[in-house]
Image (cartoon, rainbow, N blue to C red; front, side, top):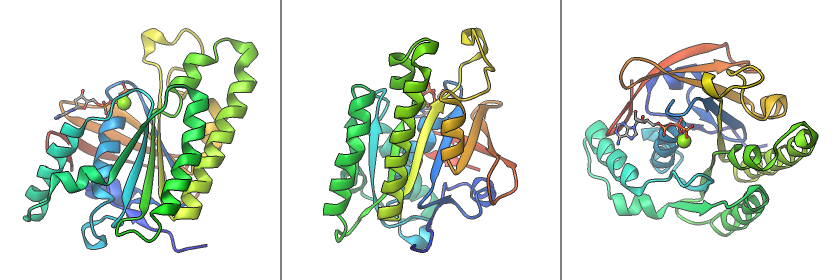
Length: 249
Ligand code: ATP
Ligand code: MG
């Protein structure tokens, strides 16, 4: 087992809550309502992972499995500009974009298969200048939720999700990489059954993900990130701001 790496979120409180940053070799699940900032945090991590360790990164590249077509290169450009502001040096946006490999997943089976492709690619890049140090699945559950409707198919869905998560855990272990997945919770008017604050996928996602972060909107650009049921860290909350140049304290 390799030494666990830490990826900085760029936010002091958030990093401290996580014991220094997002762990490698673990799955970190971000769940919350639409607009709570899950995709924004994902974009920021895709930028930060490329930084050298002294700037909180892992000197790595990233693979994004994009299931809802929400990856935005323009957002990366804004966040890279935000880095210059933070560190007082120039960064090349094109270089950052090159180290973000985005794969669209068209359905849940395709999504699962893309983890195998990601494993192959990461293996090819093992000795590259920037090996793959982060894999993001945004959204982990949207396809599953759309395809498996009704109680009869629930066990089937959980089994597939479980398999998917094990593949992702394996990716994190083999590459000493961070694994970050997003999961939407239904906003109250849409929650016809069940607890609206419980993530889709229920307890299987809950048990596999080592770190579970519940994001919710606060005033203006502020978001509250709550660490829930961590095996080795105290529960806590961090306040972050989602701004045009990126995540801020
Ligand atoms: P969903 O469940 O629908 O995928 P999400 O949790 O992924 O939602 P995000 O897309 O991360 O939500 O958050 C969207 C919010 O991020 C916007 O409402 C806005 O507040 C903020 N945001 C997005 N782009 C920018 C930007 N360029 N500058 C500042 N804030 C932005
Ligand atoms: Mg999103």
